[in-house]
Every structure is written in C-alpha cells, then in structure tokens.
Image 1 (tube, rainbow, N blue to C red):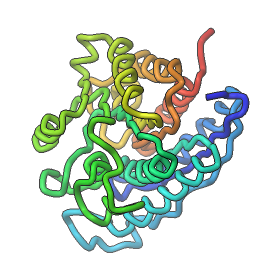
Image 2: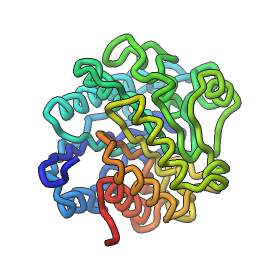
Image 3: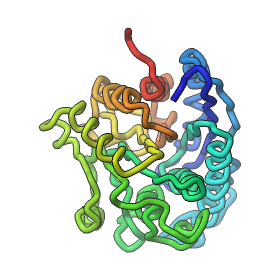
Image 4: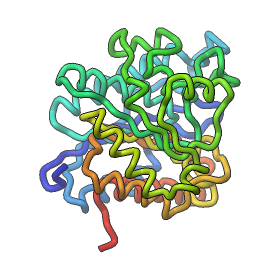
Length: 306
C-alpha cells in the first residue's frame, strides 16, 4: 500500500447497544480527539473522514428480545456500515472503522465480503482480541451481540444479522486467525476446536514469542486470502496500558507487544482494511487509551521509530 497516494476513509460507528456496559459509543469521538486524522496525514495518507453512521441510542428504544437486546437497530446500523465499507473499497479507499462495541464487525465484514465476492478476492481476517466473540444465542451467557460477530460472519446466529449484505457466510473459518485470546466461554471453545480455527492465546504468545507467531499467522493468511482485514479490540491490551475499554481483562498485551504486532502487520503490507473496537472514554483517564489506540493505528499504517 502506497502511503503517498492512498486515501483512508474514516467511518465512525458510535454504538454501545451490543455491549453490557455503556460508553463505547463515544469511542469514535475519543479517537478523533486523540488525533487519528492528523497522525495518518503525517504518514502521507489522504484522509476522507466520512463522519459517523447514525445510530439510535438505548434511551429511545425498547428491548424487544432480552436474549438479543437491540437486535433491530444493530442490524439496521450494521447494514448501513456494510454499504459504507463496500463503497470505500469500490473507490479504492482504505476503510478504517472506529467503534463502538465489537458488534460493528458484523457490518464491516459484510461490506468487505460483498466487495471481495464481486471482485473475485478471498477475504481473510486477523482478529486481535481478549475474547473470541464467536458465541451464538444458545451459548452466550449474556445475550450481548458484541460477543457474536465472528459467529455471525461465519453464518451462524440470528438471521437478521447473518443475512446482512446477502444470505451467505461472509467469512470462511480457514481464513480467520485469532491473536491474544484470554477469555473464552465454554461454547466458544468447543466451536473454535470444531471449526479448526487458527487461534493464538496469550499463553501461546508468551511461549512462542509475539513476532514469530504474528509472522506465522500472516504467512498462513497470505496463502489463503487476497484481502486481509485487521479487527482490533482494545481490550486485547492489558488494562494497565489501556484502562478505557469495554471489557477489561487482566493479562493482556503489553505496550510494546501491541505495537510489535501492528508493526509486523505493516511490514508485510498485506492489510487492506482495519477496525478498532471497544474504546470507552468513560472508563479512561485523560483519553490515554484512545491516544494509545491511535498510536497503534499509526504503527499498523507504517509509522516507525527510525
């Protein structure tokens, strides 16, 4: 990807309807305040900020199904996001989606899949997260949709979500790799094994080394996919580094490990789209987590020390 000619389309997805805790709807604003547009321009990119997808807040809605709260609005907003992402790719732009809870990935991946399907490309996803987000309604302890986007993208779950952008699986299990997992529900563990998904936990990273594992994961995906998407959940990072996240879990990536992963991805030049999820300014201190996330975006887009 050439930084001198490439346009990045920034798309905000200010949603917290898929999460059990409020506040991540302010993530896109926090990331903009932290200077994401300016950082990308400094790296030589043209920046097209498309603003935010319009989303109805929880206060003006009724919960129709306690098992899948706010399903109709999440489906509507993700449909709008899918179209925006597909439009960006059709114009040769790089979609950078700022969230918002991780249910955003349902829309992002649907848009990517539509573009890939029409252009004859294979879609691969690097999912960097503390959680595997592969629950279906029957396995989810909470019913919160932000724990389901991987399952939905694989074609499992509520038809209102799996049918976004077309009634077909948006992603193949062989074209997905997890990095940084450390909190997995029993039903998710069974599904990951059953589908044979490539998954690297924090224990794997500790044993095998971050750079070696990320390099291996990217090489595997490059053999199987033409368009590689990075879905980055800020809670993959340890709360001591980034406290302002939707669901903080101790034992995550260090500051340097997180940057090393993003630098390794940038070095290969394979990333064609990206989303950043679960930035929660309410739980943050002086927007430090958003500033850290913007630094990671810059690392993934080619920023170097020397």
